[in-house]
Image (tube, rainbow, N blue to C red):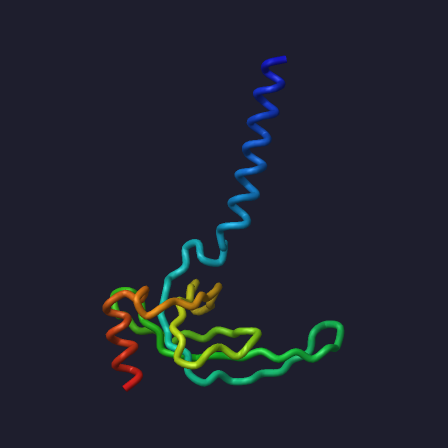
Length: 121
């Protein structure tokens, strides 16, 4: 009886832990390089879904900088037009963007912030 209860509790803990992990961890960010960009004009794109419906998305190609100030051209898409001059952290795996997230100026690493400010001048 005790063994069955212990096994049940262990299974329950594993299931709950798995659910918490899935909800809180973006797998597109694991093993990705982080680059910081400042939004400029995006290119409005139109495409068709498999069911024939048209949809609009925006493509951005920007100069990004990692925490050490190393430069890389970053291309990613968004399903809406992003706020101009906003700062983003873009997670890159090779040449593909896995995800992005808006960050505040105070959250930018010093060297990336300096490079972005120079680029904006």
